[in-house]
Image 1 (spheres, protein in one colour):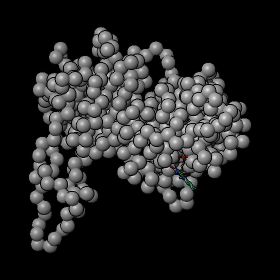
Image 2 (tube, rainbow, N blue to C red):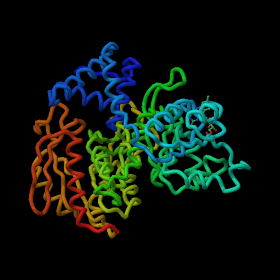
Image 3 (cartoon, rainbow, N blue to C red):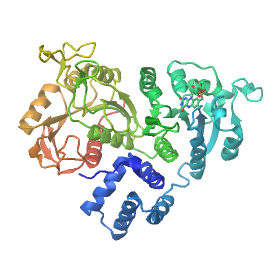
Image 4 (cartoon, protein in one colour):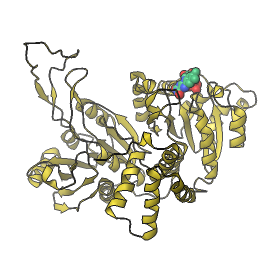
Length: 491
Ligand SMILES: Cc1cc2nc3c(=O)[nH]c(=O)nc-3n(C[C@H](O)[C@H](O)[C@H](O)COP(=O)(O)O)c2cc1C
């Protein structure tokens, strides 16, 4: 099967793809896949739409002469004025990606936002207050103890006079400070003193991002309701470095800001919904684990669709390779036990949707050191014990959410198994999907693939939905959840 490696595309093409992905709120890989799929399946209804896709496909294959129409198309769709009247307080941390914040300021002002900037002392090593001030057309704030600004407690005023705080780039240091409640300079004091929503766009060396301390801090901040955009995987500014840690592109950050500030009346506004997604990894030893084929695509799409309807979504994700959905506070876990703990810590909630493929068993005797292969000793024997049943636990919990939805991935007796699960687990409905090879859904099947065919099993019967993309399943399911919650009073 042919594959496109985004990294190998021309920079210009990568930029175009990034812009389109940001506009559509998906990853670059998903954007490329969607465009190719739409073109191949001929699903693009109108001629001009097909033309657009062809242009984009040509751009993807690296033909620079053809890239121009795509630029024109995306330039047209820049939502000028979409942030009119909105006040963004941008905190620039001290990382190499600080140069991208200059473009972010431009993008936000292009959307008619007013942008006020706080720079850390380290940030000023990377970009000057002069350039930032020129682009933001405002005074740049750098000092906590500033005679001019502190006579009226400037750090409180900065937060009060903003609709949203954006930290870009977010350094490992700023994450650590806020996760621990430290406030020893203007940026960290403003962050601690605010009651406004905060969006963080981390950027750092992949090893810093993967460090257990940073992972711990991210989990704390996400639990506190801070929303993250990125980081992305890719090449770093440092030579010979690649991995996860690249700051999200300014257009992606602008899209996340638009989503967070979108105040159109939404059916799920004020509702807190927990979603689980992805597989769990149950360790055998520090390097080996038991996993399953779940990609997280369906669960992540549902979290994104619920967030679009205005829900305050808390996504608990097992280890996946796809990006956190924009605008969704995501908690990352590895094992079933960690997933259970994370879900319980998020109660109370209005609804919970359990999409994750949680391992039924874990090893009772996971080794602390890598198990060595010793000649003549044969393979180690693994003892398995049952994992906690998260769906049943929440379905019968004292703080049970008003609506509990489970997923049943089955390879046989789909409906009978889903009906049994519905009763046993205390769910309101079960979304049953056939994950067998016979499901007829493409060569990659449901698990890991992009399409799904589900049946909604409830006490009142079984509703069969046609085969569709996982994003479409997510949108329909979010609408169904909104409809079911409509009759429930917000507490
Ligand atoms: C050349 C250079 C590049 C750096 N890039 C980053 C970075 O991308 N991300 C990060 O978290 N820290 C980075 N650092 C380290 C931070 O600058 C350092 O932790 C600093 O204390 C952060 O301060 P702040 O959080 O107040 O902005 C870099 C340091 C240097 C010297």
